[in-house]
Image (cartoon, rainbow, N blue to C red; front, side):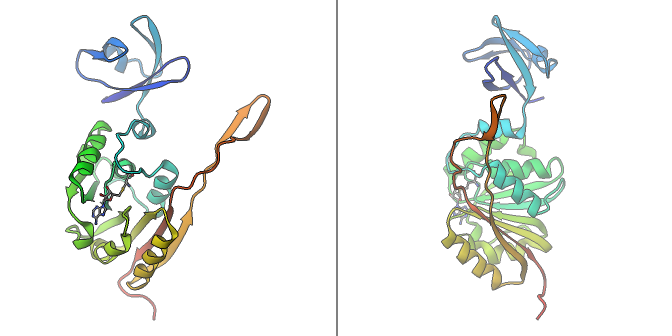
Length: 251
Ligand code: SAH
């Protein structure tokens, strides 16, 4: 086991990367890795304080991600994974990596035998994405490649190409070439202008089932005094456009 979450009585969580032997964790003191990893689902005492030991989930890694670019959140990445039919063993091409939040969700879905090749223009973001992927224990399934995805994708027969770029429409010809027949493309964009250009580019090539949605998520507070939506407003994230590559359309 690579990482665990230590949860205190107030529900505050701390992601801890376990190593061999004794570990000195800042603000916590010294803990015994073997004792912690054999206490999943149970409390342990560290420096006189009690913590519940949880196995680290994808959500835990996403909550602790080092941020550079704006990240894609779970409601959107989960929908992208399902609509692109991404499963264990698949080859997925992504552009750009940004902080690697979407990369983590994609890698988690193709793990352990699949592969995500994620193109990133900027060296600093490539570094952040690689660190986040490594911290989540998913390096074996991910290659963050420095490069411009709009100037070509080396991979062929990909199950899916997933885009989160300022100008995704420029990458659509390269995506068509990289996809296997009936492979899926997904593009995530914050503005409707981007969606319009993207759909126009998809319609210019043999793609079918072109569809754009916005996913809204509302937290529900469950209390003895009443069950109702939280007061927090529903924030905008992005629109998701998906389509499937075919070799020829019906004329
Ligand atoms: N989906 C990411 C965020 C991506 S932000 C996440 O969840 O963390 C968009 C990223 O695309 C930026 O890092 C930017 O540098 C990169 N980018 C922009 N144009 C690109 C291009 N043509 N090829 C590759 N990467 C590109």
